[in-house]
Image (cartoon, rainbow, N blue to C red; front, side, top):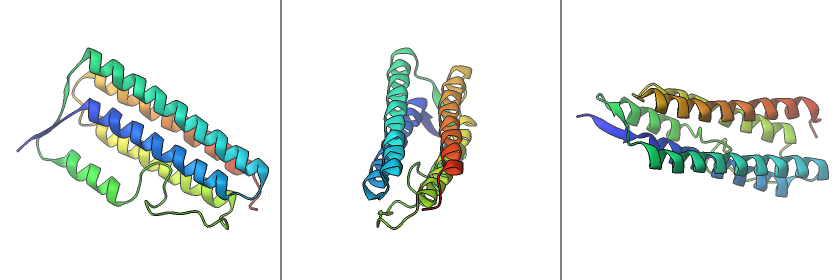
Length: 164
């Protein structure tokens, strides 16, 4: 039995990923002891808010312009989505139940964020394989590029902060 997903669901997931990431960085900012590190994490939270807004706009635009389905004749996309969720690859969370204790180093937090960002990219790359139309593929590619920009920003910051 084939399961059809709309690309709308992908954009809704992207919004939630960004929402999760913003909360993660706000929590990290509150847990950080160093003022510069607090500012770094707050800036990252604001970037995630901006990206959530981009995805929200993409979702609204998509709702107004198309209703193309994602075809999954062997239910592979459902299995893929479940695997990602179970492996806690949601952006901004190394583990869904992760709470900051205040003793994490900035490097540890950025490292977990990098891993989660990469898992998000992997998620979108997987979803892109199931999309039929070129327009849908292009929209998902935009999401991937946004996530890649997060990885670059995080990596640059990881290289410049001491392991406090």
